[in-house]
Length: 399
Image 1: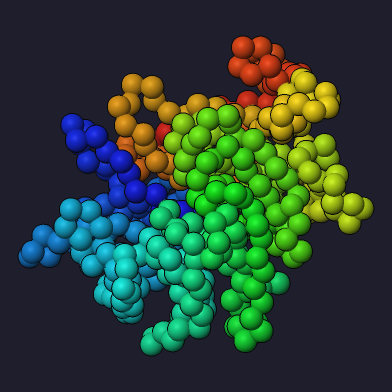
Image 2 (image 1 turned 90 degrees about the vertical axis):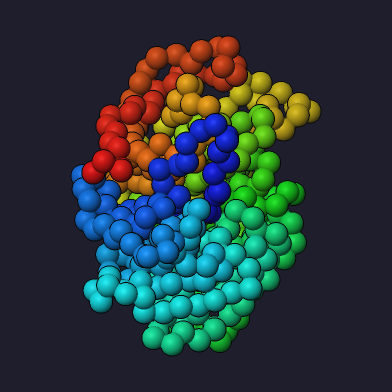
């Protein structure tokens, strides 16, 4: 899961086609919402599975946040847009089998993000994360105070080892990790990671629950920590200039991390590379393949890039940074606005992007490419042996 980021739209532009978009827990489906309701699609092939268009007499039909629970009949909804269906501080759990709301939860402040599991409801506001038991009459399990979290950064990983929730800590740049599974809810299993100097902008947890990736509001560095011992495993550079990281997502096998920013550049980092980041500093207990279990063969060019001056001592940290092994500008230069994209993976080599303003679904594939890197692009050594290709796109609103 990724943060819910509001769109900044110039006044002369039309309104966004989608108010929000999100993938379900296994990324097999995604949901989008707009001024009239919400829709659910299969990720690939992209097909409309369900459309709910609200038609109230008052005209208040807008949905600003939508969150699925796997492929079940339950969908979390929060009002949004010009004429919200529900107040922005009120959560509705919609039962699509009965075609009506089944649960309402109300808060003091606007809701910024919602995460669901089969036994938990997690609601994120600007300075709090509330965890409820998912039942007909939800009871509050935990309430966590956070540093100012305007982006609603939070993620939940559900696996056999527990339900790990990641969200900003009470201090700037901190990450809190909490096990909110029923069997551990009374053990107060909370860890603190000092991840960045600036505040947390975006978070995501790997499918195994063993890795947590984070970006600060500065957006130049991506860090990945081990959730079991809070050790820093990887440190990646996204770029030099400040940027807003709008979405991050691990691949299904936890071997790659995709990152998208408001610069409209998609970066993919390799987590198998034994020469990556700070992995070698963690001692003999760490293996670059520790979190990879499917045995997929790495592409020839899947080594993350380094600056050609990396070996010279006393140079600024920038020259020792680890960069993505593949990147692509996925924006339209003719656009007069900065669209907000949401990342999903359909398999370990295929990335799906959902664009809110344009209302489009786009498919990208990582392939081998032995062309040389342009020296003027940053003096990165070696050859670009992997590239990202756009192979398909569709207009969501026309499906």
